[in-house]
Length: 263
Length: 272
Image (cartoon, rainbow over all chains, first blue to last red; front, top):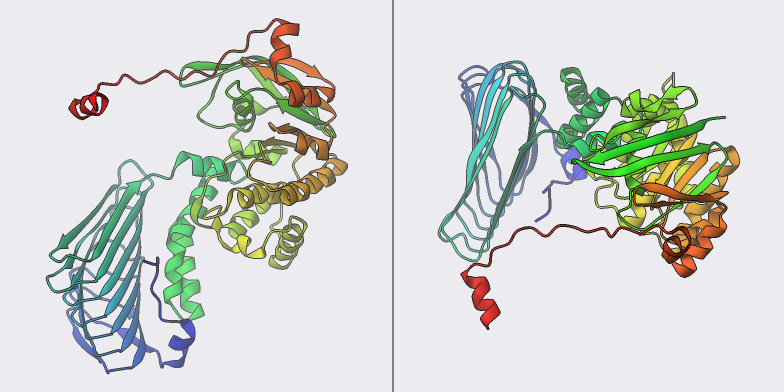
């Protein structure tokens, strides 16, 4: 499986971008019509907000979040019909306590989903991202990439389950969770779970939680970067790929500034 | 003119003494071929000069002119003009090669280089090394072939212009054409006055870069510091003459075997 599944940028540029802001405890339902290609940018995501999305046959949706405000107890629920495609990029630079639950249901034959999360926790932030992907039909594909950087006394948890249910033959699923830990008092947990009820499938997961490897720091410092510059460069490289999910150049620049600012 | 002076240097790794009293001077403008069997401390010496945290100096000194190198942090050694072209450059996912090169370059300058000048410099340097430009836009060393990694090391050398460059088997993984290209870059840097200490097991690179001296390390000590004719001699006859002419027994690079127990499956395998 490739490391990323994308809608091409040229295809996205053709569609009219929709910018959404969800208020506290607000529930929003979005339906993507068959064969449509849509791009939705969520600029504000609030406490208790629920986003329900239904993607009809052969439709494509890219959903990108720039989360700067508290969105604790928020939910994203996505259902995909036959041949539908969903890509989501969640750039999290919020502060404080957060718990996000994401459920992606691949209900239609040949539907596929890509989830990419970049989260930075610092100070006493306490965040949990619970990402669940259900393969309910044959030949469905899902890839979940979660990247985190944890500093100070913060806590960051990546949890969730990728399940391939009976009848989902020929399906592929992959979960990647990586958290880079900066300080000894951080608490970082990557807890991927795979549930497999079908044969003739491919399923894998990888979870890495750890400090920056000494050899990486040595290499960069041996070229003149001091330790803090080296750490910044590594962190930047770790989180920056999320910008690929945002079409607007000014939003990409804003994310880069947020990474640099919070480092 | 920069001069690197190493005196009575002793060092250990994980409690094992590797370097047992190194005395060596390298000046800018010199190219020193660094020879010796595997496991006798050549790479250790280079890593200690540049400040690898795994190695511990127990005695001795390293000075770059009047500056005590052992008291400097790793980045300060680089800024002072020392460079190590590594044998196995690490892969750092996510860090874009050109971002890293620009940050390194800026760390050596008072004023940051402009975007235009940086890309102009990068373009001419990659062309000089016959490297595809896209290597600069990829993650640092990630997915690079062995030869590409070595060229990337030389690219950094070319851009950072150190006073003394230490090259650890920079020719391994290079095909004939790539070795010629890398040697041409080294020759240009020699003309600019860069000093080189080069580890290699093959005479081919030395034929191309024409060292001014050759040193041989055996058992953690430099036992020969002489003219470049030793390169040819060692290439043709090996290190046997060290024992017969200098009376030095060459220690074997032995690794203790771990304690093993043969379980039931192992026993069955043996019986069969």
